[in-house]
Image (cartoon, rainbow, N blue to C red; front, side, top):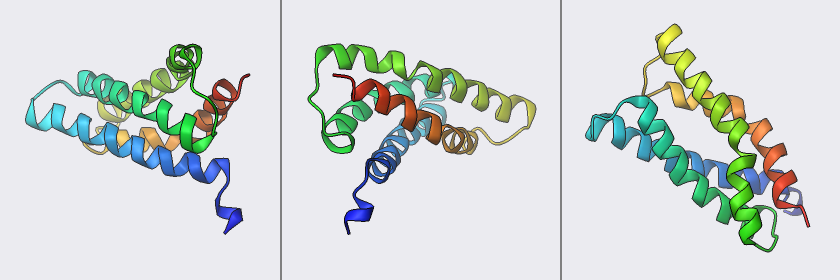
Length: 125
């Protein structure tokens, strides 16, 4: 069982929770509130970012949370938000992928990059 209790496994579990949180907020924004997909993306990302910090600190990397890490964490995710936003726009506007499905593809492409960046930031002493 120990082989399944790795940082990457825990990261993937937390990532699944965060992706679900993002997707729920995103879908509510675009389908219930009729908000443009870009705004829904930013709102969903913000909600999942806050949850991601706490789940990654306590569960994935098992490090002590600090204000510095909390304030630095969004900066560490700037690559993620920029790249996922570009992917989302490209999938919807250029490839005509449904706006309800496009974020799923964007998230899948960002998993390895997010794992590496998140670990470097949160494990800093």
